[in-house]
Length: 480
Image (cartoon, rainbow, N blue to C red; front, side, top):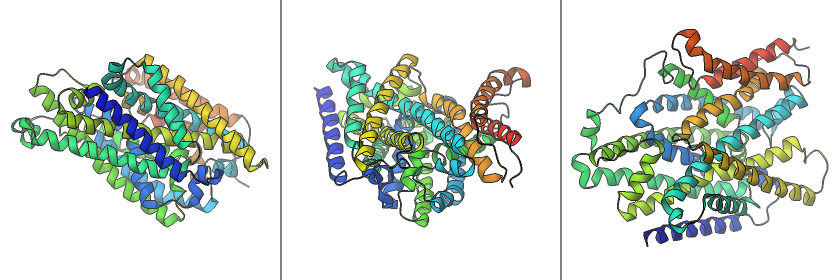
């Protein structure tokens, strides 16, 4: 009976999303799909970006890291704030000055067509991996705790959810996503606050409270072990560069920002969003500590990504479980719908060049729709791969993969912005961008032996970017 209620809620939520998509998708064009006609409300964009940045990974994985990593994740969050400030005052002015639809067009203007295509390809690879990892995590939770009882197979769940995402992003694109992300962020944050409130005010309040939290070591904020992967300095610096790369150099995140009609409002959006994001991440860590105390008091052997969904759906009252499911499906979509739209935009604009070929609007729309469906199929395949891996901590996988795939993007943009040197426009740029992650991988796997214990963590992205930057510098000449 309870599974039926949860299933009904999921169906109603999907119907609500389709209603919003129908309303916002009327009279849309390619320009609406790609950048929302540059007329998006900055407050809606800022609020909706919270859900896109957090996604199901933060919702499920961050609370689960508290047992082993304490509150060290806040070290990364401090780095995020630095990164968002650099995006607001360095990258956004550049994008608005050039009136970009795709941010990778900057690379063509600065270096040429090879750099442009390379940047777009690395974005497509990065965002496909990251989005499908996030999508897999939430689909898997829904499957285990709701849909298995209806004997619905995992592949069918993944197919239906991807079909829903296609349906509500198919016409409106960014114009629709700005509104749906706002709805989804609201659902996720309500679920977070309700779960914290209930655990603190439940019958376990005598044992799960602030004073009992302080008796544990969960509140450790800074790791001072230089050799550790979570050493505070490397996490702060790494967090800053993760933000610059995964937000400032990411077409999905930036196409929402540049859909705001003025630079000043877009900067206001970025800065306000960054502070709210920091507070929300702190709340997720507090929730994780409370959940581990709850599990300890009830002799539950839970950890990692299993912690939050198992307690919420099997040990808390049914009304809390319902709120959790609404929050969970709210966390499911923001990273997937925006990624699907951004990948479609980047492939059509950057790789196919539909704006430069003089095609009719009807032909452009047809190609855009075929591309949209094709990427959904790629998502389906990638979700199957993550199902085979079946990791217990997806957030660590995402951060590691981001270090390899976003590094070349970071190196390309940094070289273009920080130097005035020229690079011959040829395939050597592609070679450098492929070699950098390979060298980074070798370093990661041997540095412990070479240094007597030092571990590369989140700073992998910076190392990868520096290798790319160095390779480009060797190839370059003084600008004429």
